[in-house]
Image 1 (spheres, helix red, strand yellow):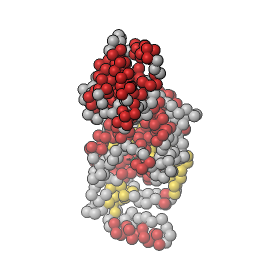
Image 2 (cartoon, rainbow, N blue to C red):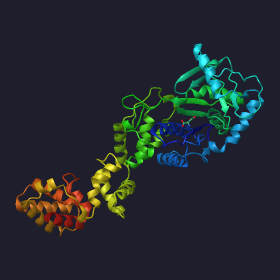
Image 3 (spheres, rainbow, N blue to C red):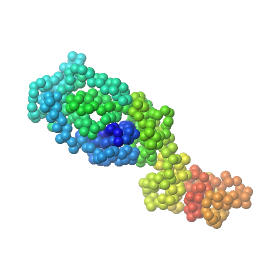
Image 4 (tube, helix red, strand yellow):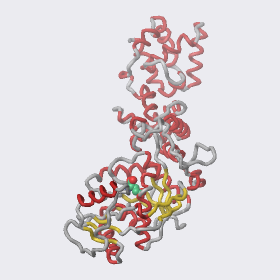
Length: 464
Ligand code: GLU
């Protein structure tokens, strides 16, 4: 195992969305491609906005995408004592101090700075007062007054911030709760994280975190900030662009490998290859090909990838998925072997499993529950075509075995005997068997339906 350790650190204040999922995928790929470790940390310090239900949903989304993590997830809410120990160390070493200024006083200091055209910040009044703990007192970090904090971002390149731009940030609130930036640094150190990959909404936190690493004497990891995903209109991505949470994609019948492949390519490339198996990703992933240009979400490309993976999946696997989607529509106790025969008819055309369930529902409806497109019935089931269907049904009753070849031969025999063209019979038969005017090829449809359903449906159509 190499020394590479990465982590994904979601806040369980909502579902895992595609931006977060993409960061998780990059971190996972970096660790796994190097034989390193990938850890999961739940950043639930904001207890009012976090919930166990969301944590569960995030873990479920990660598992669905196949992003396995090492060890048990770490929960920040259980580690306040640890963070406070490090805060005490900073106080003892004179790198942090108690501050008794009230929020109003701090706001007034900011206002004063603004009036002078300076960056609004705390003016350091309590910095050298040597105050001890007391009600209403926060702990602030003594940010160096001069010098620069520099880091070489794996995605954005070198970034430098003048320390005087930065505030003496609060690291412990008056109620004793540690502040986010401090907790992240302590955790990343204790987990021995070597590479932090995250969204570039965090880029302004990084210099503050680096100063804390240095003050605590911790080695500083490498940072890479990936740009946010945009909507097709280049505005901030939202629901209205068709973006959903990971588990909503699952519900809508996407395959995890399609979403994974899609998200990786949104911000990373390897030549112009579009389709990657997990093995190929693990073999070719490096952070040097992460791009700093914000990528736009493209639902059509995701659908295209999903169709690709649906074609490649085994009918058995899709039959299990199809069963679940059909169950949601009230079809219980379906025969998996029957579903496994249905699936290949739709693998070339369905873009999602939901679409597949829509298209194939007629196969699993009880014969007496099949509903008919009545306009098609009027148009195609004329007295004349019904008479032909009755005859051809009698021939189908005798086929042995009841398969594509037998059905085709029996149909041809009837056409030869009557001098009819197949197209005269095809749509009437399709309407009779499926209730609608589109379906896979008739002979394969009938072979899959089997003799009993085929005959029952032809009979029922005669009585419509
Ligand atoms: N909890 C943060 C978020 O969900 C991640 C912070 C980090 O990766 O350092 O945005």
